Length: 357
Ligand SMILES: NC(=O)c1ccc[n+]([C@@H]2O[C@H](COP(=O)([O-])OP(=O)(O)OC[C@H]3O[C@@H](n4cnc5c(N)ncnc54)[C@H](O)[C@@H]3O)[C@@H](O)[C@H]2O)c1
Ligand SMILES: N[C@H](C(=O)O)[C@H](O)COP(=O)(O)O
View 1 (cartoon, rainbow, N blue to C red):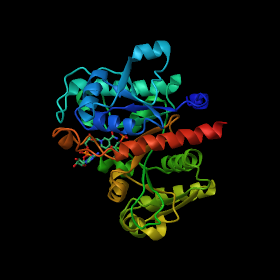
View 2: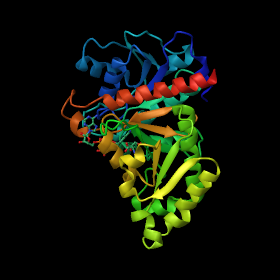
View 3: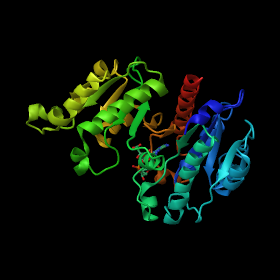
View 4: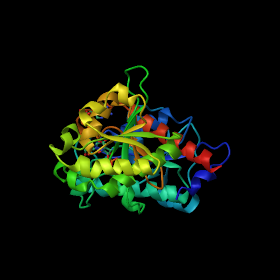
């Protein structure tokens, strides 16, 4: 997988799959708006129900033009390249009528089918990367498929033993802030299971993946990674938990011995301040709600979620399905994060493409 990155036709706009997400949420709207806004730069290929996307596009702006092919037609004849005056769609039909704001488990498997089509398309050379609009994890579980997130699903479907979720965004202040990147040592699991999920070996692999992908896909020659402790005050010399001494610290030391500029563990509550972040390329947080609230507070609406360690490029938005907005109609959701997800996927694809030449 990924070999197709070198097959970009001279002069052709790169193609990126954009999955349209939970149909009852804001995903279809923001995917259409972002793809339309970026149509001059990139051939976004929306994956979703063609009739539903056409109807949604018509409500957003009748000037938006979509052209659709069935998945089977693409399998038979290659990708639609309709040009920059319209958005390409590959039809992945829904099973049930969509009521905005109301989840329907009958559509859960169709949402998963868009992810499968995206992965198939990268393997087949139709796309250079995948950007995903938000889906509702609970609906897929309600449909009878155990599902904890795109991150884990893409790992499983590509046979990747370990991946890393990283979110990135540009803080507004201070003015000289570098991009804030927060990677997670654990992803979607109950808080009570976090400590047991942290191992020296797992953290070692996480640090290797973060360092490798920041080098190869972000062009950072020697990434500096600041590692947060698990416990309050990084364990207070063992009086508030021993994981920082026994697991996190040794993993950081071992990474340094392998030539990775990892530092820590630092107390998480004071790590996110400019004097540390200004020289850092990434913070590794131990769990989802240790790192992401800080990132989202600083950059919500402009952030991007990137899965590191995959054999393909996958990005996403920094927010969810916003059913509260979707239920009230179109025009309430911001699509800045979706645009940034597509732009980041494009930059990453360009970096890999350039490196492969
Ligand atoms: N990339 C993804 O697929 C992704 C990411 C995050 C959450 N989710 C899923 O989304 C579902 C809902 O999650 P949640 O309720 O915790 O978070 P949410 O992001 O959907 O909503 C949280 C709040 O942010 C607002 N908001 C979100 N996106 C917005 C946008 N683009 N413009 C304006 N306001 C916006 C919502 O109106 C709401 O007030 C869950 O199933 C969650 O797992 C998916
Ligand atoms: N953890 C992500 C966030 O808070 O933005 C979100 O749940 C999406 O995760 P996946 O990309 O794994 O679906």
